[in-house]
Length: 273
Image (cartoon, rainbow, N blue to C red; front, side, top):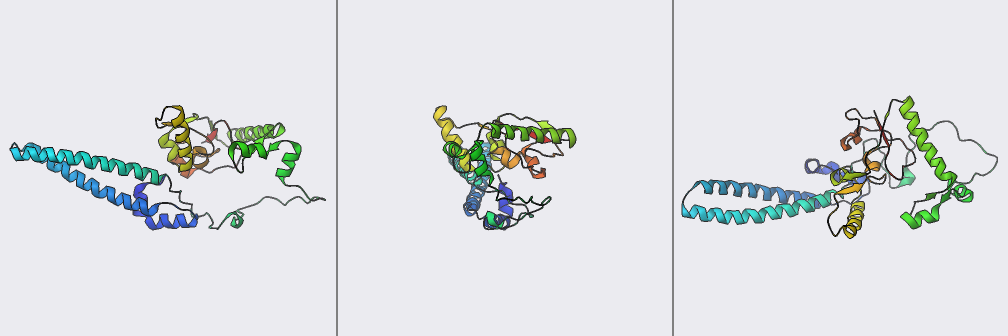
């Protein structure tokens, strides 16, 4: 989640980042609510100061003024609290700012090849795409994946699942044994502040809230499962170099270099050094 102070001091940078991502984010509404909250906070501090001064005076009118101020302070504190809740909800909808090296494009068709290795092997026949091969071999089930999780998801079966597990194990062994990384296995559950800080999708937060409200009697959830589609994807690269902490805090994500690898479905395995 972007820091509110950064948004306030750099609105043009944030606005340009949103445009570059072809995204829609409530930047103007955030700035408006932030200004309103700051004005109310100034007013609130003035009231508290006046009430404190009135409490030192022993005159009857001063006591009456102090009681009136106490009521106004209570009402204004509630208004500020409501503004804080609204601001937090809006900040969760703000996307992260892309790095300066990220190319700008309208969609995936304008992706840029950063680097490549070797030459594609020339075959005496027209090769099939992996999704056709996977289905014909019975190792990828797209139909069940879509039923379970929606578009672009799949289920690995048999040798497909075994291959996924083998590639994950190979990556972990390679980087821990040869590249100086340290393997970390964090908890499945994280606090809400950790889950939302790296810019996780607010729709996922809404889904979690709806599900948990049904199961625990309407109480807001305090912990969230650490999945590759939430915290891990945005702040916990599977393989990461960290210069500050062996446990890879969320703030270390900016210094991390992600390595593409099949995701761990039932938890998170991170590497750091």
